[in-house]
Every structure is written in structure tokens, then in C-alpha cells.
Length: 461
Image 1 (cartoon, rainbow, N blue to C red):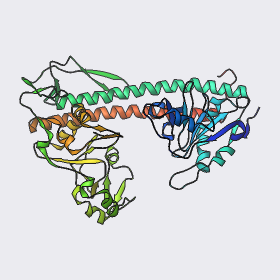
Image 2 (image 1 turned 90 degrees about the vertical axis):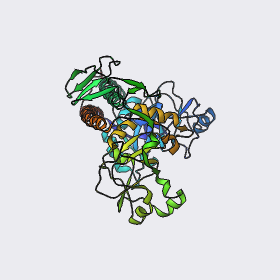
Image 3 (image 1 turned 30 degrees about the vertical axis):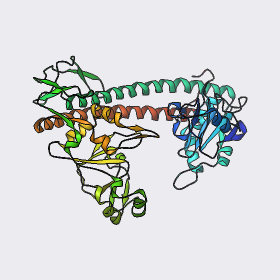
Image 4 (image 1 turned 180 degrees about the vertical axis):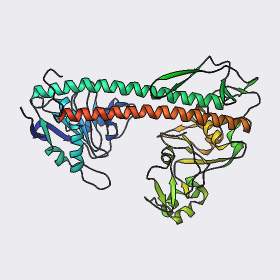
């Protein structure tokens, strides 16, 4: 029998969210489902804000979300959906809608798969309004037509897709774990090299005898090969006096970072927030690039933000020319470090970062590696204030200790780490490409099944 096309409001109860922000409570036992935690048919409660019982009661007056119900986003982004699992006490965040399927007409899992299909996303894209932020009107969501085959066929489709997507999700999980292992290998390699636990000799890595025979795993994307590291160490070591650094080579120095700072500044060095607001506005194009950490992470290949010539001249204390170290000082990325590469365009520092310039005893790339190491991050972490969000001040940064090898050894370390981290990054990128292919396969499979391109018989095959 051909599937009927029925308006969503005919096969489910649709309840809109509250049009106000729910107060969060980190000790609350209830979860607020916002648009950011809805992805690929799932609700990621690990990243959800918590709310108190009183807030939960107020936010569920219209309808209490139940296990098996669907929550879908109407904005930022449009059309992400997830299924509420057993035992989850949730309420709706802003720009979300609760969908309670009528069980005698539609299977909730089938409806979820239909709503997250590529077909539905394309339809929602057409229906969405708003030039800057697309928004799906509640009226259009209610009247959106869903292909509804016989209930037994819906159940067969849901069973089939549950099985197949679980297999794909397992592959994605394994690949993600593999990428994480290489990320950890990279962090370990950097930290142990910049703190003297590993050393370089004629381009070969040599490790401290105190470190057991570790293996550097090299993967060409098709398989793994273990490369045994030799176990020659520096002749003499001494205690650095810093817990997270440990012992360092006798001829290396350990000192407060402030001794080597030529400049440490930030966006607000140019004036108060009120003065900055009067003199600086961000533009989609302009005279000079406003440098943010996200720009550096993407190699300036993103669209970015710009400022006018007048604003650039006003921000005279934070002009960027290349070779500076940028450190995130507010928010989730607090402590993240990036080295500004050589640039051939005018640029100025964005907010929520420090700009640091060091003297000639430290190579730019070496101090970038060291500040990005776990030994420095742990020191920064201790210094962070965590009221509403993590934050560092300039004195926090000045008080951390760093390790300083002779300049010729810094060069060897930089050359070695450039080569090895580039190799590891390529491996990670290969794994991430495989993950993206699996995600695309998942989307295509769901779409082809719910639109009838792939036929599923009643026994779920």
C-alpha cells in the first residue's frame, strides 16, 4: 500500500516551547534541551544545562515530555531532532518544539527518522524564513506533510534503521577513539620533548631512560606500524621545582615566563568597552582582519571579521604582524594557545585573548609548543578563576613557569615536532575523513529508506 501524506499535526501533538530563558541550576536534577544538543536524532544530555524542580514544573505546564517523544529545533539550526529516552526528565529550551506521536497512527522511531532525513531537511530549508538566521514557523511545522505507510511497515523500517545506524555509529565511535588516541600521542610527544624527557640527536628521537620502551605508532591510513624508540637520555637531570614539569636536563633553565615577556596585552588595552564600542565595529569586509582564535585554527580560510582603517588605527596597541602568541583568556577555550603565522595583510587582535611577544631567548615556535603542552596548561588551569566561566588575568599568565633549553636545541626540537606533529595531524585528518564518510552514509541510508528508494519488508530486512 502506498504511503499516505499526512500533516504532522494530524499524527502527533505539537507543543511549543516557552519564549523566555530558563534559569540554570548546576545542581538541578532536570535537563533543559536546547537546539545545540540536538544532533543526528539524538539528545546529548552531557552538554545540557540543568534546571531546578520549580523551573522544570513551570516549563512543563503545557505538557510534560515523555519517553518516546521527539524534540525538534525550529531555529539555529532548523530541523535537528532527538528522541527522549526512558528515565530522562527534560523540558524545552528556546526555539524547540515537543512532538508527541499518536501511537495508533505513527511509530515514534519511524517519525524521528523521517524528520531527520535529507528529504525533510530540504523541505524545511525551503519553508524557513529569515535572511540572517533561518527560522521554521510553527504553522509550517504543523502543516508539514509526512509520508505515513502502514504501521507494520513503519515498525519494520524503524527496526531496520536502528540496526543499520547502530552498526555505523559503532564504526564512528571506534574511529573517534582512534583519532583521540593520536591526539593524546601528539600531546604526549610535545610535552615530553619540550620538557626534556625526550631529546633529538641527528634528527632521531631519543627518550629518557626513566620512560619505559614506548612506541610511536605510525599509521598510513590503511594500517598501523609500531616504531620502537631508543632509550638514550641526557647525561644529567635536575628537579625543576614544578610538579607538572618534573625533572629537566641539567643544562636547561626553568623560570617564570614573565622574565622573557616583551609585551603582554589584550583588546581592552585600547580602551574601555564603552570607548571600544564607540570606535570599533565589526564588518564582513574591511581594511584589516580582526584576528580570533577560530581564524587561526582554520588557517584564515574562513570568512572572518574585519575593521575599518579608522578602527585599525584606534586599536594601535594590539596590531598583529605575525609571530605573536595568542592565548584565550575567557570561556571554554581558556588556555588554548595559537602562534600567528607570517601574514601579508593588516590585522588586529580580537577580544577574549592575550597577545604575547617574547625576547630572543625563545623561538616563537618553541614557546608556542611549550605553552600548548600539558605542563603549561596544568599551571594555567590552577590559575583560572571559574565563576560563571573560566578566566585568566595577566598576572595569572605571568606566574607560570617554563623550560628554556639552549637556542640550538630549541631549533632541533621545533624541527622535530613540526615534522612529527604534521605526520600525526595527517593521520588524524585521514581518520576524520573516514568519520565524515560514515556520517554521510548514515544520512543517505536513512533518507533512502524513509523515501522508499530502499524497500524494507515487514521482518526488518
